[in-house]
View 1 (cartoon, helix red, strand yellow):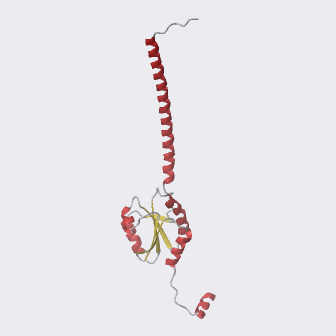
View 2: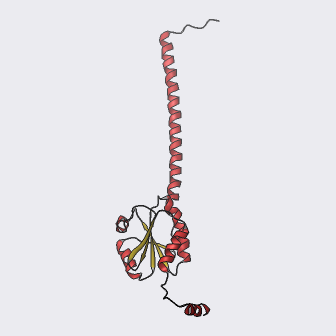
Length: 185
């Protein structure tokens, strides 16, 4: 069987058309891949963004401070009560780990301390007034002055030791007999 003779002009056009078709199919596949990657990227970013925000803070346990006036009023009215100010950011992983620790402490020590949160991204002026250079930063304020600060994430016991140190009532020196009488009563 003899095949018909193909004109070289047509065969070149045919090959060019075939090559263009391959190229177009490759472009379509590439575009589809880009769209799929973009779609999954947007979906995963949306999920990450929602998980990166700080969990809602229980108003009874830890409150947020929104401005300098609110902080100044709080410090002025705290008298000798220990205030704990946590400087945090929503995007900060150690800050997220610190939140449940401070919530537990706030519940356990509610008679002696008050804990407040300050978002450093929204309240730079408050951050600067406490000379915060890193987050999380926890400032302990008593009698209108910053008595102690911790920058970074520490175990719960470290915060409890600081609280204990600054909430101890100063006991007068007692003789052994007086101490025994107090212990018995």
